[in-house]
Length: 470
Image (cartoon, rainbow, N blue to C red; front, top):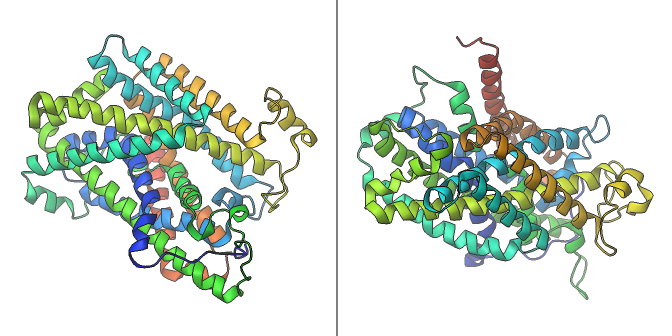
C-alpha cells in the first residue's frame, strides 16, 4: 500500500481541538448501542466485579480504532479497500466482513429499535411493535432521503447533554468506593455466565463494524486529506517531496490518535456511569432489565435519583441516544455494504476511483435495475441495503421476537466473535504501508493482544455452547 500522493498541512496547537468531532461522534454512537442496555444488567448481576474488564476493553478499543484510522490517513483509501488487497482467494476478506455483518446489522438495528419502541410504548398509546416500526421507518426515511448528516448533528448534541446527566446521576448515587476499587483488580466471578457477559463485551464502546466506521469518519472529516480522490493538491501548489508528505501524514496520525483517545475516554466515562447506576440502584433491589418492558425497568435508574423528573430524563436519554444510534447504524451499515459490493466487482487492488460501469457488470446491473436515471451506483446500493437490511428485515425480526434483549444479544455475540478477524485483518493491511508511518512494535503487539483477547472470549462462548464449561 503506497503513501497518499498529497497531504495538507496538519493542525497545530489548539487547532487540533476542532478535529475531535469524529471521536465524539464515535463515542455517542458506541454508547448509544448495546452499552445502554447491557451495562446496567452487568452492574445488577455482578456489581463492580467486572469493572476491570470494562476498562481493559476500553484500552484495547483505543488501540483498535486508532489502527483502523491509520490506514485511511496514510493511504487515502478505505479500510475495506485495504482488505480487498490481502493475499489469498479473491476478495475472501470482504466476504468475511459482509456475511457476519449482515446478521449483526439486522439484529443490531432491530434490537435498538425495539428498545426505543419499548420506551415510547411505556409512555404513549400503542404497543412496542407499533413504536419500534415507527422508529425503523423514521430512520430509514432520513437515511434514504440524504438527511442523515443534519439530523445526526442534532442527535449528537442532545445525546451529549443527556449522557452528562447520566454521569451526574452516577456521581450522586455512588456509595461503594471500596467495592469499585476491588473491581479494578482482575478476577472472575464465581458464577460467571458466559452467554450473559459475551454480548456486553461485544458492545462495549463499539462492535466489530464500529471499528471500521471510525476510519470512515476520520476520512470523511478530512484527516490526512480525506480519501484519495479528495486529497489532490490545491490548484497552483507545488508537489511535495515524499519525505515532506510522510512528515505531514505522521503529524495527522498523532492528531487522529488523540481523537481516538477522546472518543474512548468519553465513552468509557459514560459506560462506567451506567455500571455504577446498575450496581447501586438495580442490584440492591434485584432488578434485572429484560423482556419487552426493559425500557420501563431502565427508567428506575434515574427515577430513584430525581423522581418524576429523572424518569422523564431517562426516557429522553433512551429515545434520543438510542434513536440516534438506530439512525447512525442504518446509515453506517448500508454505506459499508454498498462499498463492499462495489469492491467485490473490482479487480484486486484496483483504483477505487475507476469503477466499471454498472452496465458492464451483469449481476450488479440486474440488482440495480430499479434505480432512476442519473443515480450513482453507490447511492442506489446504499438505499437498497438501508431498505432491506436495516429496514425490512429488522422489522420482521421485531415482529417475530419483540424482546430487545434477545435481539441485541445476537448482535453482541456476532460482534465479539467477529472482532478477532477485524483486528488481525487491520493489522495485516497496516503492516504493508510505508515503513515510516507503519505501526511500530508496541502498536502491532497491542493489536495482536486485542485479537487474542477477543479470540479467547469467542472460544469461551463456543465452549459454553458445547457444554464444556459445566
